[in-house]
Amino acid sequence: MLQEKLNECRVLMAEVSQNKQKDNEHQNVVKRNNTFFDTYKNYFLPIVKGYAVCKKYSHVSFTDKTIDELSKYIDYSKKTFEQKTVINPAKYQDGVKKLSEKIQSEWKSQTDDYLAGIKEELGILKLVSNEKQEIQKILACMNNFSNWPVDEAVSSQYETANEKANEILSKMEFDVEIANFLKKVKDKEASLLDLTDSIIDWIRREELSGNIILSIKN
Image 1: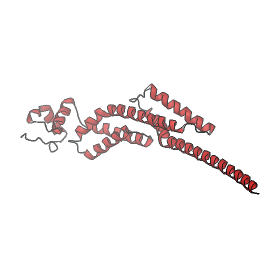
Image 2: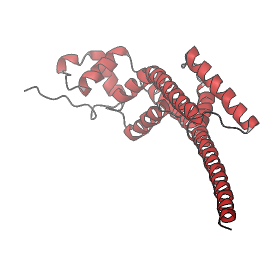
Image 3: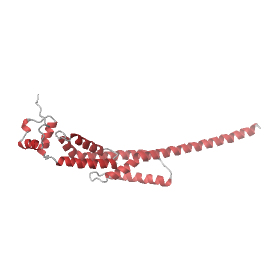
Image 4: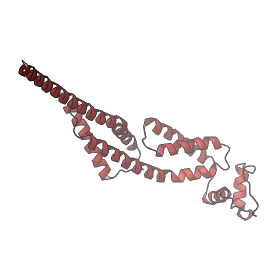
């Protein structure tokens, strides 16, 4: 009788062990799937969508290595969905995060360089313009455009801001001499000696006499 009970107990223990193993395997599958889908949703999709937007602009050119990495993870993601099996999601997560950092760095550095000139002109013009708030909004849009991830909404806002910026700049004659003078005003280095006839004519023509202040050096 006792032996029979022991045998029954062993059978039950074996079943419990098998069920536990199946449960652990299921939990591991769930964990792998969650890692993959979280990475795909939060990192990879923004990369793909952002890359599509970036390609509309000629000022940016991603490195061959970055493009190769993107192509590799597109293939991996497609294969995972087709086969419905997640393989090594931790490696996928790590690689996609690094790819995101690369694209972000390349996009931001090239976009900042591209916008540097017009942002400097707008920053100088903001000192004397009657459209200070509008210029500040434009600069904010341009700064946001440099950040990653970039999407269609950000792209549209930038296009509108860029058109407005060119419109504002085109209203004023803004040559190198005037730009240098306004830089000095901004840095509080301008003096009466900087007020050449052409600059005085420009100030009067643009009706900016009340907007420019020269300070006295101590």
